[in-house]
Image 1 (cartoon, one colour):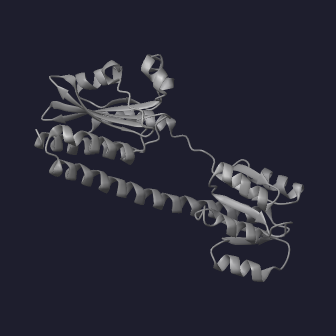
Image 2 (cartoon, one colour):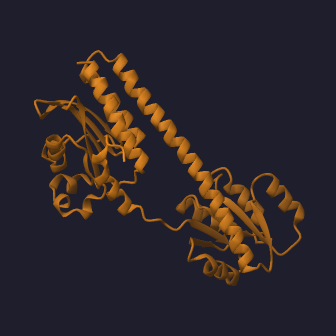
Image 3 (tube, rainbow, N blue to C red):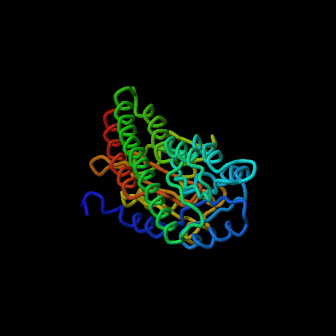
Length: 312
C-alpha cells in the first residue's frame, strides 16, 4: 500500500463491509400467467425478477422501478407487441439488454428490431431453459461491462473536473475565504454529497470562515460538536463513518439524529503538518464510495491545501 495514505485503511474496511453484491434486476413480460411464473422461477435465484402481464403494465413497472439489466418479453401479446413495447423502452433505458420470446415466424418485425438495437437476441418457443439461461447470462455480462465503462468514464471526468476547479479557484481567488465555497461545491457535486463544508482552522480550532454546499439548500453546521471532527483535528488524519446508525458511539449523537446524516467523512486539509482547514463530506444514506474515489478525495485535499496556502 502507498505509504502516503495509510489513514484511509480504516475507511476502506468500512466500505468493504457494506459492499455486498445485490441481485441485478430483470423484467419478464408475458400475457400467459404460466409462462410468467415459469420465467420468474427460472431466474429468481440470480436476479430480482419483476413481472408484468402486458407491455402497458411493463412500462408502468419500469416507471416505478427504474432501469433493469435485462428485459425478456413475449412477442405476441394483446394491445402491444413485444417489439413495440421494447422500442418504447429504448429512449429512457438505452443500456438495458432486451430479449424476445416468440412462437411465431415474425421474422420481419424481429429483424427490424434487432437491426435498430431494440433486441439483443430472440428465442423461439418452446424455449429450452438451459439455452435461455445461457443467453441471459451473456446479456447480463454485456450490461455489466457497459455500465462499468460508463462509470469509469464518469469517474475520470469527475477527477479531471475536480482538480481543474481547485486549480482555477486558487488562481482566481483574491483571498483564502473566497476559495471556500467554490471548492466545497466542487467536492459536494463530484461525490454526490448531501452536505459538504470546507471550514478554515485557526490555532487548532475551527474558524468562522467556511464554504458550504447543500443539495437541499439547508445549511446547518454542527462540526464543532462532532466527535469525528475532534479526532481528525487531533490526529491530523481522515476520520469517518460510512454507516453512522451501525456505530453506537455516533448513532446517539444528537446532530446525527436531527440531520439524518448516515455517513460522514472528515478530512484535515494539511500543509507541512499544519491543519489549514477541515473538509466535511456528508450523506443521508450509507456511503457508497469506491476505493478509488476515497483515494481521490485524499489526494484532492492535498491540492486544496496548496490552493489555500497560496492565497494566504
